[in-house]
Amino acid sequence: MCLPGGKTPKNAIGKNPFYIKFLIIFQMFKWCGELLLCGVPHSDPIAITIQAFLQDTEVVPLSMTHQSLYVTMETQVAIAGIILCGVYILIIFEIVHRTLAAMLGSLAALAALAVIGNRPSLVTVVEWIDYETLALLFGMMVLVAIFSETGFFDYCAVKAYQLSRGRVWPMIIILCLIAAILSAFLDNVTTMMLFTPVTIRLCEVLNLDPRHVLIAEVIFTNIGGAATAVGDPPNVIIVSNQGLRREGIDFASFTGYMFLGICLVLLTSFPFLRLLYWNKKLYNKESIEIVELKHEILVWRQTAQRINPASREETAVKCLLMQKVLTLENLLRKMMKTFQRQISQEDKNWEQNIQELQKKHRITDRVLLVKCVSVLVVVIFVFFLNSFIPSIHLDLGWIAILGALWLLVLADIQDFEIILHRVEWATLLFFAGLFVLMEAIAQLQLIDFIGEQTALLIKAVPEDQRLAIAIILVMWVSALASSLIDNIPFTATMIPVLINLSQDSDVNLPVKPLIFALAMGACLGGNGTLIGASANVVCAGIAEQHGYGFSFMEFFKLGFPMMIMTCMIAMCYLLATHIGLGWNM
Image 1 (cartoon, rainbow, N blue to C red):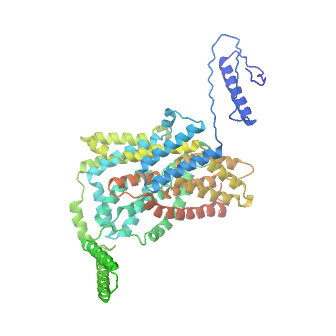
Image 2 (image 1 turned 90 degrees about the vertical axis):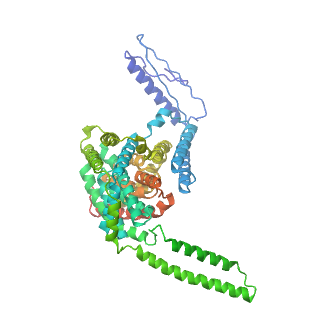
Image 3 (image 1 turned 30 degrees about the vertical axis):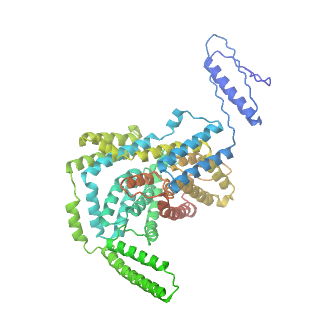
C-alpha cells in the first residue's frame, strides 16, 4: 500500500485477513485526514493507491467511501438559518399550511445537503423520522376518537361549568391546573388530546371563544410537563443518558429538583396569565340586535362623511346625521352593558342552566365508557411502569398502538372509517416533515454551532462568575432555541456539550446546574412559538378540525410573553439554589 508521495506503511502483511482489512481502512482514513489537515484544496484531485500483500490466498473485502464537502461550516450554518427562516415565514404569515411548510423546508434542507456533497439516501432520510412519536400520536388519537363516542367530554364540560358556578376565570384556572398536573405524569401531547375536545365543548356551552382558552391550557401543559422526568421528551432524554446517571442525575433527584421549581413557576403564572388576558374578548358571539346596530351606525357615519357642507342646508343635514350617530352609539353602549351582564362571569342563572345542560349533554354509552376508561388506565399505568422497569422493552408508541387495538376489539367498531377520519393525518405529516427538517438542519451543523458558541461564551467569563453566567446562558439559549427548533434534537446535542464542558479542567464547572438549566430552558421554551412543542401543534390541529384553529401569531402574542416570564422565574430559582445555597453536588 503506498501513496503518490512515496510513503509506504511499515507492514501491511498479516495472516489474519480481517486484521489486514482493518489496517487498510485505518491507514486510509489516517492519510486522508493528514492530507486535509495539511491544507490540500478540495478542488485538487487526490489519488490514493492501495496495495495489499497477503501470505495466503484468502479474499479480503475492501470498501471505500469518499465524500467531498464544498462549503465551510459557517456557510452550512448560514444555509440552515436561511432555510429555517423561510419555513417560519411560511408558517407565520400563513402563506401555506404548516404541514406543507414543513415538507417544503425539509426538501430545501435535503437539497442543501446534496449541494454541499452530503447526499443521504432515501433509507437514511426515512430513518430520521421518529416513528415512536408518530405511533404515540396515532394510538392516542384513535383512543380519543373512540372515547368521544361515549359523551364523556360533554359530561365533563357540564361538571366543569358546575364547579366554576358559572364564572369564567375560575373555570379557566381549574382547567389549566388540571392540565398541568396531568401533564406532569402523562406526556403533554396525550394530555392535550384528552383536554382539547373537553375545552371546546365547554367553551361552546359558555359562549366563549375556545382559541384563547386552548392556548392557555397548552401553555400550562408545557409548564407542568417540565415538573417530572416523564412529562416532557427533553426530560426523558436527560434521565435516560448513561453519562448523566453516573453523575448522580437519576429519576428521583431530577424530579424532586424540577418539581419544586415548576411549582414556583406555576404560582406566578396564573396572575400573569390574567394580566395578559385583561383586555381579551373571551366571548365570541353577540346578539343580533347589537350586530345590526353596529352596522346601522357605520352606515350613518359613512353617509355623513360623504356630505360636503358647502351650504347651510347641507351643514344642517350633516349635523343631524352626526347627532343620530351619537344617539345610536349611546344606545349601543347601553346594549353592550346589558349584554355583558347577561354573559358576565357571574351567571345568575347558572343552576338553571346546569339542569338544562345535564338533560342535553350526558353519557350516551356507559358500557363503552367503562371499556374506554379501563383501557386508558392500563395504558397510563404501563407508561409509568415502562419508566421504572426498562426490562419491559416496550416504547411509548407501541404501548399506545396496542392500547388502541385493544380498545377497537373491545368496542366492536363496525364503521372503522369514521375513526380514521378523526385521526389528524395533517398533524402526523407535519411531525414527519419536521423530524426530517430538524435532522437535516443538524447535519448542516446549526445545532452544533449553537452549542459550541455557548461553550465559548462560558469559557470567556471570569472563574468566580462562571457558574452564574453559565446557568443564565444555557437557560436562555435553550429556551430561545427550543422555541424556534424542536427541543428533542437540541437537548440530545447539548447534553454531550455540557458534559464535556464540565469535564474541562479550564472551566471547572459542576454538571448538575448546567443540566437543570438545559431542562428548564428546553421545556419552558416550547411555549415561545406554535411549533416550539409537540403539544402546541397537536392542540392546534384538533382545534382546527373543530373549526376553531388559531394562527401562529395568535399563539405567539400569548405564548412568548409567558415563556419570557416563566424563564425569568426559573432562572431566579436556578441561581438561588445553585449560587445562593450551593446545591451543586
